[in-house]
Image (cartoon, rainbow, N blue to C red; front, side, top):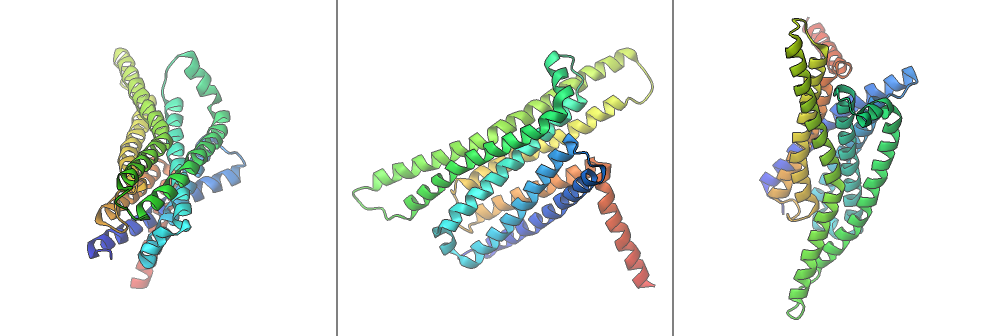
Length: 311
């Protein structure tokens, strides 16, 4: 039976997931409507659609699984549906990680002012490369999620099988090997986009440092739009990276199944991951004026209705 505190944490995670669905839903609606109206799919909009779509489905899937785990209890973790749900969860998570990494790379390519030939080539071709990068990363996420299903299935059988006196040491070794396999698989799906996000952040900071030195040598008194673009991109990318690392640690604990079902530790990790997703959507909305317009309109209409009713 789950403790009251664990259920409270799980309820908090569900509320945070709903907030994340609302935030990414706004981003998805604005990006899709822009592409449909203009009939032009810009690389930024494609990345935002991919990221927001994965996040909306993932948060919805998480809420559904949380409710099922509460009402079905231990029977949910013993069926094949648990293996399927876990695999879909991993695929959506990995796809979201890759979309976030490509967003950081896009910011870096568009804002940074390096003069290397490869960087100039990438800046000129980023628009045509983004669709292929998204497709390739989705296939990679699917490829790394499929072996994960086998790992979860074998670990579940190992943990549910009775330990006899004769083969207890062999069973413990099998359990340990399966947990290690899950950790390796999770790292394979997450480390590469994490490296991309980290490198993009470092390159943006270096570009800002070079740009600032040039501005100091020129000593112009006007506001520099390049400097403002650098600062805005660095704030976004570094915020993504911090949330990325926190999410990565909690996700690793969740998918390795080191916690008991509906335990406080597992519920706490669910709260943190849901908070990171909701925070990510807030940062994306706040950093883009087009996304900020929708919540502002909603608040404006809500205030007008409240004033009308009060009269």
